[in-house]
Length: 393
Image 1: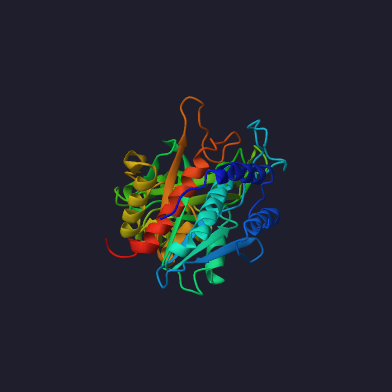
Image 2 (image 1 turned 90 degrees about the vertical axis):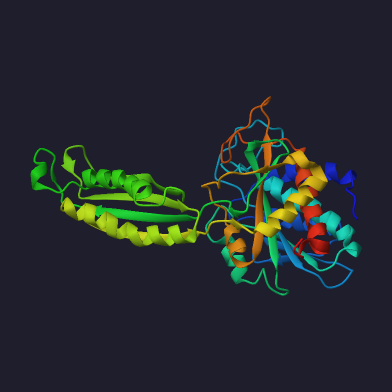
């Protein structure tokens, strides 16, 4: 039905190296956006800039009516100083593609190239979405609100993510929850200031905050169904002005991760009541600001089954690994999967002989041989879905 062009592989390496050298933070991907459009123009593939830094490519099959599929890649980088010593390391001080988004973008470009070339054999339509701002809350949500899943209405959406915890070339996938939601909170404990020598005359906000942190783990482990994952993490504390003064305020910032909407809503409802009882029992007061963030990525079982067939067809039966549990990390692809049926999968890059650093590490890198593998999977799935995949097979 289609055939990979080996000549495009070297182009993909060149594209990825350029993207890696010029990373840009969320919503600042102006150069990245322009470069993506430049590549599409060189291939004479029509495109549309979407918003300030997004790009979409609509590829209509010549066969006739059919499903409307979207493939998504994230394009932004992270505020990290690169330490890889690669010959094409980041030229932007303090900014790095430390999460593989340069790879995701390149793979989708490889898929675009082949889907466009072989569009005469497709039915329906594929919308390829180059999405900015994945590392910032709400970027996918903004695109959805701006109509990226409409005109025409998209039925299904698929994305991949490079994954250093699976062997090179192995795909990790599961139906249902794939990643967690990510909600944030800022909690301020209010006490009463005083001299450190006379703590009984004050209300120590730091001591109360310590009790709150301890109790949050009780909330996470003893008041929830143990088979439903829940993480409540306090990652930042600000309190006190001197070592001999009882602090009258302590500010705690944290994140909450769940894998079901039910647990997500329940912990949100319980958090303020739970913390208020603890703080007031020590004579303090508390204020809480809760920010709803990214929803969990929930994979559609049927889309996953077709995707697995495509992967096995393209790179071999042994290349698929069924994941046992979701990641408690988050990805704003969850907004897409919340709107239409979708599937999100991991593509392994682990190489024991060279060592593999985790995502968001200043030494994170991957073997470029993974680029054509990811592009082939996306392309094959699109062909399978637009021919028979949308049917319940």
